[in-house]
Image (tube, rainbow, N blue to C red; front, side, top):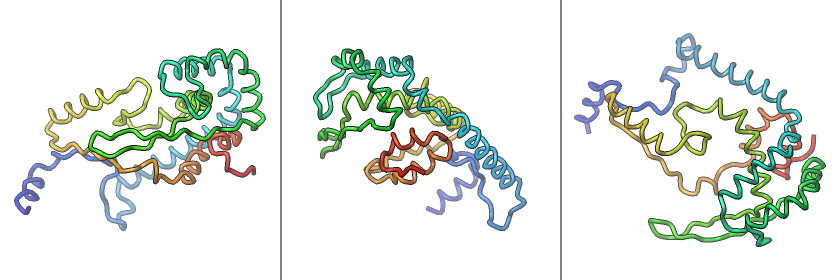
Length: 230
């Protein structure tokens, strides 16, 4: 153990740093890294404030006909099983043709009701089963329409080293980047799998973070209907 620690000290930068903030003592308030991080924090908060102004009426953008049509194409291409109403993606086009105006009206008037998810158990590669919640295709349509507008504001703020579930990025690119790190002398790749992450995540805290950058309270209540009007 001591031999490994000494080896790591000699290698210096041989380990991939997971966090950008440099280590420092709490008393080093004048440390250049601390000042730099403080500046980044102020800039980030300022960016969120500007974003709140730009998203005051983002719900109208969500229910725009072009945005909903784009969302339909994505949901349709993803396929997948139907929810509790048993409607599948092959029926969604006809449903939209008959109900799209009413759907837009319900969303804008905040009367749209999200359906319960259909619970399905699937086997896990390592044994046991994983519980999945399958929304209705109508709810998946609305979710995709929301995502398409929010990602425009949030993706530019994500880390350059983040590849999961982002437009134009993939797991293959993450592997390629890790290979590049190795070629430059890095030796550590950390793979973290948080057990039941989505079961334990604090949704109230997530909504609190989201509300700092989204100015349209109607959209926030659509995402989490239990939010009280101000």
